[in-house]
Length: 77
Image (cartoon, rainbow, N blue to C red; front, side, top):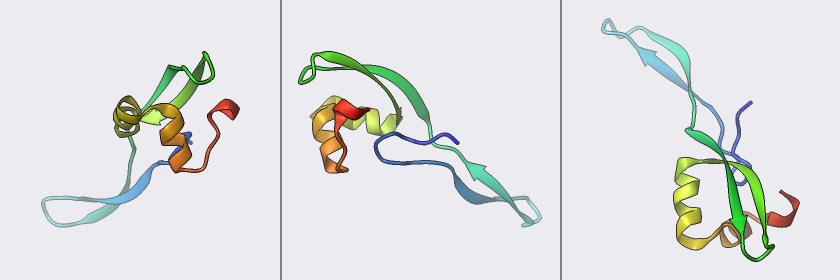
């Protein structure tokens, strides 16, 4: 199953609603991207799967700080 490595974001269940208001179950998938990011603190690249909203936050505050919010160590990713 597709899942974000840091936040754990994964698919959600939702209803597809037709014009006649009949509801059927469907999945909503997050926009997950696999990226190779450079971590200056470790002086190496890390391959990680993140949602696009996670990537925007990583661009702002950095990968180490973002992983620390969720109690993760980047060196083990």
